[in-house]
Length: 174
Image (cartoon, rainbow, N blue to C red; front, side):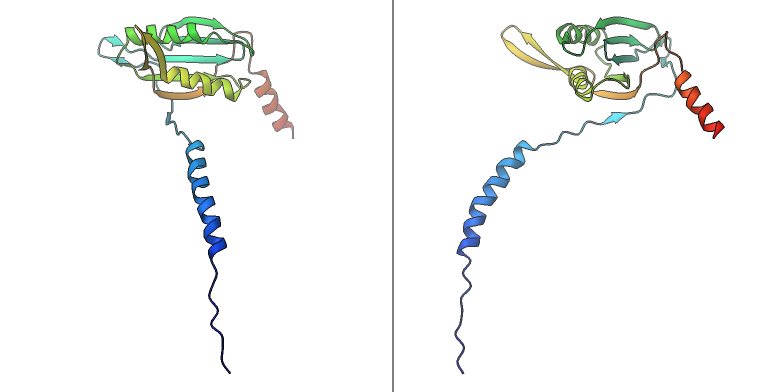
């Protein structure tokens, strides 16, 4: 009994690989993921270096406004906005102005209201970390505040913590 030797035909498989490998390499470039390192806000409310009070820049993001403030001295600027349109130019110009006054500062804390959309948070983080400035005829990217910390926005003056108090009371009744 003589057995015939059968050769393995891998031509179809090689044709598939010739098409599949370049396709996967091309799509890998478009699915790039950016990782942004976030820090927790400092424990103490005031950071003092010698006799000088250090800038602790905060951006409070609400659905209807941006509030840029220093945690030591209070509000720097209030920028009204709505869900449809945001004046990013005045926002960026203000941050660039603050950066020119405090060139060594790299930290900012974003205090975010729970009703703010994810898209707005990401746009604010991009604008806070760097800015594009037209210098003569060139577009220059300037680093602003790349060290971003995040937290919850404080309640407005008219708001109270009744909702959290009522949930605690409901939990105690059960």
